[in-house]
Image (cartoon, rainbow, N blue to C red; front, side, top):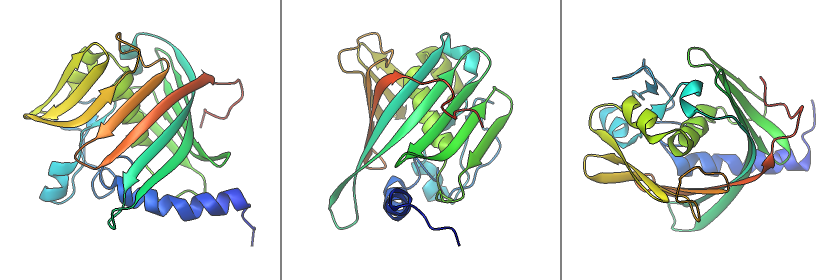
Length: 226
């Protein structure tokens, strides 16, 4: 049997706590099952039991061309959450994001190892996972959060199902269901909301926050492509 490195063992042991904390939002999008897009082909809606469905934010699949610019970013993602006992936790992982008019590509890494890769061309979604990555991990949810923060507000708003809206002002966005702010996004020092340096997402309903910091341009040959 192949022996896992200490980094892989550490992250394999840490990820279940992360998965549990993110609940319906980042890794499992409800109960980990999905249905055909609802209301818009750019949104994949979760289809768990009614109570869980009400708690899940829409899963965005916006057209790559709708971004309107080219990205090649290396990102550090810090996740903060509180467990059932009230203890605070912090987990970190990395993401490599490439986006152009034709395709959006994402690679999620932890402990220097690739967890998953994703490629989305607006029609076909390709996802590959490393054998040691948790089955619950959904790179689609990571992509959705990045699209919520980075794609133009008009493109996001047009893709939302009935009852959901996007509000925006200099340095902030909010994804709302009715009058409730489900996800709040901040762009510190960035009134144009481009997210070039730092993005802070608070998933208020699900009780966790993400801090996404751009470190540098993604290096060539970084394994983003599935």
